[in-house]
Image 1 (cartoon, rainbow, N blue to C red):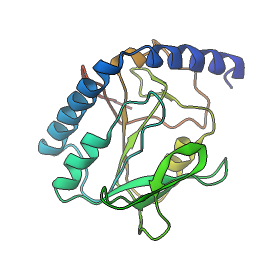
Image 2 (image 1 turned 180 degrees about the vertical axis):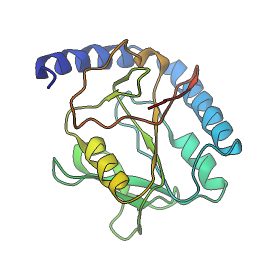
Image 3 (image 1 turned 120 degrees about the vertical axis):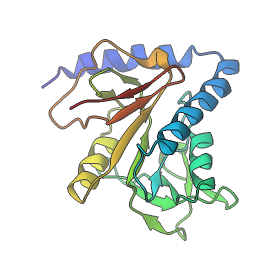
Length: 194
């Protein structure tokens, strides 16, 4: 079991690095990540079926350009709805033209009337990552529980999306932490070999 203080310190460091990225660099990085994800889709590395993404919170990389690209390719795209702490996320169909609700933590999410989808591809936000496919989240465990639940019900490909500066030599991990299958930054696309 990792020392919780070590994880908290890593979170503070990772958040400071991510927050320090210039606002003018953010759209360029999002566009580069979109291009890399489009290449993965074109090369057949991404599974067919529904895509789960996220609405950016604070200084997170904005994955919406990639989600919109996948939607234009005919893929159903969904965004998460956060339930009580300690539960898996539920993904609802996202229509960029439809009004959004404001959920827990002030994050935009599809309204209750939108269909629930099971993603076969999940774009995952994070505070930090390492080249072993480990990610550091905010500590609530939403994505670890979600990936565990999705993987128990069938195949799902987890693609972490982040700025390159969010890489750490080694992310502190625990036994319940779920690994990513790919990591995409504005600089590179990493396939994780497990």
